[in-house]
Length: 230
Image (cartoon, rainbow, N blue to C red; front, top):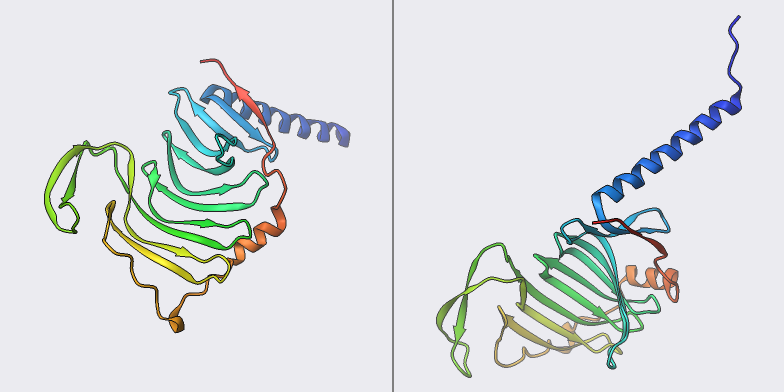
């Protein structure tokens, strides 16, 4: 007659296996990264690899300095460059900006919000690929919008204003003014504001309202740091 192992032995073995998997995961992170942070949810963030490059999801904290307010930002680094969607918060946890990055520079539409969550400004940017060794830029004549020549320059990670920049009255939600940029060059004269019957009314985006309700005044990230030898 076969005897069955006591149930508590099975539970003990299962717990031991989970602990072993967690230990191996931690050892793997230590071997793979120069430094990192473990968030309260158990996620590995703020990773610096052995080449000294930021990788993966990061939360960046900046203290107030010389009259400039502090903030926190969260997003993804790829080989030490910001990439994709980044969100910026004030130090009370309220969302103040949604930015998009490419090649480490701003790219596409970036939005900035007031303390009440109203859209203040919508910017358009173009990022240039620093992996291409050289770039050709246009040269404009003084005081006009005419291209008078081109210049070849060595490429570095950078962004330029490109497209419409729209400014809003945060009290009424109406468009205040629009500026037009062409690869960093301001087109002379702001665009006239639309007629009153076509004015865009700026309402607080639903996702911002929902976020403010859930997270206003809360600390968003709790973590413990990890440091490994070089």
